[in-house]
Image (tube, rainbow, N blue to C red; front, side, top):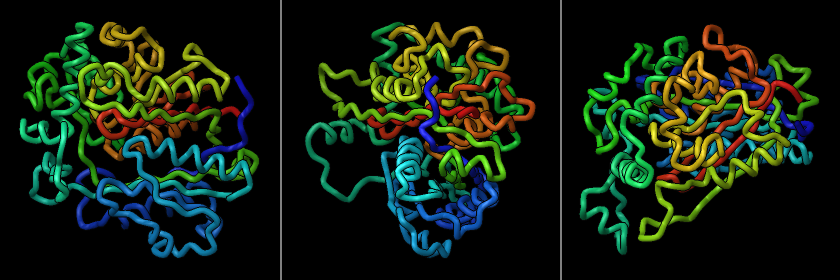
Length: 388
């Protein structure tokens, strides 16, 4: 394993998450940063960098600096590659603190799409006021207007190409719910069976209700500083060993790899190479799971199994508690909470620190974290470790 590049995550803040009403995304973001500072044993005035994942509607902006009362920041920016943003923010924060640009950088995401007495299914719907032309206009005319339908296209492509089945996707949902049972932060903690998955209603065939992530209100923040400084703070440092990004630039047209290959095939090897490890060294995975299919295709693209073998790879409880490759140990976005790329990142930090209580994984020396944005358009990867 390569030596740490000198950056570590020292603070973690998670607000109340789920059906939490009466607070704006900015309220959640400010709360998360304050909690992260307290967690690290820092004062807000110790933070000299702030990176903000501004979300779909830019509900959180750089004005968060003023809400928090931060002065004389040396780094301030909004970032958005959707669900890949958390990993990207952490990597830029690591580069900033190791170069001397900043000393303590807070990275935050928050959202409040849920409204009282309004279906969660409407949270991310809505059409742009801009004219839609070209191929996207055909999708709109065909009723393909939301992420559920577009991910269903991707999953169907994989199924038709490799023989992947709905039951194999169900294995992922069942395994993650088993992890969520012991996560007090999880929104859904009742165990499910493969039969439950197969009996859940269609959302966009071949994706069923239990293939799809939650919608949550809330926020999460982390504080990145140098490994040297982190050693003297309140929590065990979580060292940032490697990072990478991948942006395929695919379009939904004949001859594309849509649904078969994602940016994980680019960002995963990049992060592993920087960390000086291989997939054989990974003890546990925290993967972006907006849908069960996203987990399956990421496992393939990271190289844990050959392309097309993801369905067989996850069978038999391999990723569940007691399996040989723990995946999404808090329940992920399917069962725990949906805070974009902060969901897998926060659980990775909890596990690295050894704070997972009943769900704690014994072997945690090397943890791989993924982020996915858009319709498999963007990807980020982090390799983390409790050891520098």
